[in-house]
Image 1: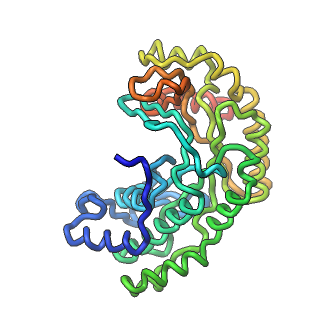
Image 2 (image 1 turned 90 degrees about the vertical axis):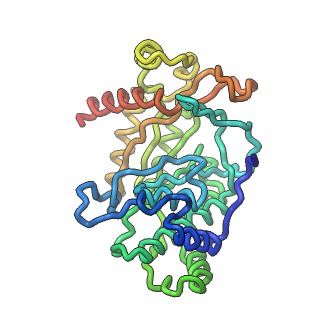
Length: 341
């Protein structure tokens, strides 16, 4: 099996959709299983000044790099879609295999399977085709009804590099590339020019930093995103904030996972007291700039590589999935208590 991603032009994606529709499915998803939004749905809500038809979505990962995966998630009801994290280093040679999801999840690399310009093109293809499908299905198209959440990493120096700055600009205004793609699609779907497709793909972002990133660096990036880019900003925090004793009790004693979290994971990560100061500072900054600020709980958990599948040359792996969820919930409870809900 190839470990390369091969991109599909927007017109071929559209033809693929039309061909599968003849068999009552899209991208292998049968129409009986697709989500149909209604204006009376009680789960509808507003986020970042935009309508969300459902509060459900997909987390950033390799799967949210490709347009057809994003569209497939939308078809089954995902409306808050975290796009794959982009970074300035977009031609990495990484360890493969890099993900093990037998039960609790492990990964051993920070990936970038596509170059930044290709990532943007995939996100734009998904943005256009989802709006096209809303129109094609005859659904209410006064508002998009879904949100694309940007994700960038992993330090301020990288974020300020020209290719990441270009990405920010394009996600804020995609008009030039959008119009070119609409012209291509008009040959297959003449009504495309009647479809309301905003030029701004996203006004919000989640910051992902490396394990061990100091609090002042995280705060600087947060302030840049809020003050300079005027983005509704979410900071992803590490599970080590819960503290070694509590975390290990939940993970190893209470739940019985054979995951070894080394002392160094706690030593070089953000400390809870520093996190509280940073959160207060960024909340104040967001209020002054009239944007929303939030937290995402949590990042993966740094642990020793004891898996049977991932390369032994990788001493550290990063735990996710079922093992991480109870830790995240306990950290959320602790933060809610300190910030009084």
